[in-house]
Length: 399
Image 1 (cartoon, one colour):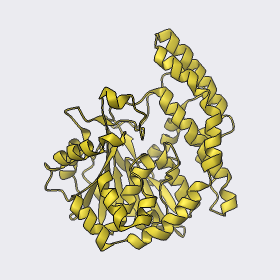
Image 2 (cartoon, one colour):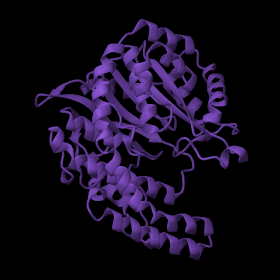
Image 3 (cartoon, helix red, strand yellow):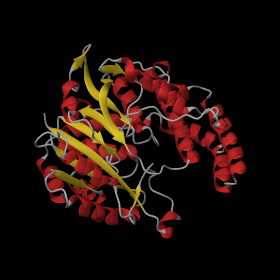
């Protein structure tokens, strides 16, 4: 099978001039351009030693937090890639997308270089142009530590299960010791009402069931396998703020595809310093209210039924009617905790969270039907670009 490995690499800057500007996209662990180190070469070195299939393509997509950083990030990434000539690498940046747009205006309307979902949709489109059969997403802060990882990637994807194509296979993350559960402190009273790590751990319990392929409610974008027959029809949702990986799982099921967890497909996750809890909670509020609204509207679109209950314990716990109240409670508790810790900045931001509840409802109402229109355009146009010679020429010219 023709395999493409998509590796998004996220960049930002500590330059005060950049920091005072509103970001064009918010990412969890972007690497400052001023830093000497980067997680990208670590992963590429790792892939050189892996069981990567002969002829596989590594698609490195450059993502920046601010448009002003596009050129610097492209050059920085190019310098890194120059040390890995043994790998078949396609280097894709915002400038490449502009050249793509000059060849295919409709494709340019579907693609955008900002935001998690949009970055991943770039990967889908590039894999389609390259006529890939299997696409593997690996974030640049992971490591493949299984000598048979890519063999496992190809074992089940594309098979039929109860008449439906297995279009997506989710892997999972571990730390260096192989542990996949998240730390949960019973003393963290300020997290009451928003037990995200606890509910995620409950979802992770299926990993130890002993079965290879499992029904799952979660997926991780940094360890995910997709089949071309699915990704040319089912894109990531460009309107969701975060959690685009689990949202894709839901969208795939709505559109009649199987998406399962492989209990033997793990990678080591070595993330950098994450963003503030107030920011993560705020984006999650928009995400959960949006997902709930989209699921409630599915019957109008006559899709395969995916109930909120079927997504318990995570993310289903946060898709109920009580989510705004839980969010408000936890934000208030974190405001109090921030005062006790003397962190006035966090106090201000957690206090501001309350005022985002109404806007999150409005966001869900405005956008909940937009994905279905986007998906129809995607499913109409993306099949047309498969193995397109002109677009392949643009990609080869950028590498």
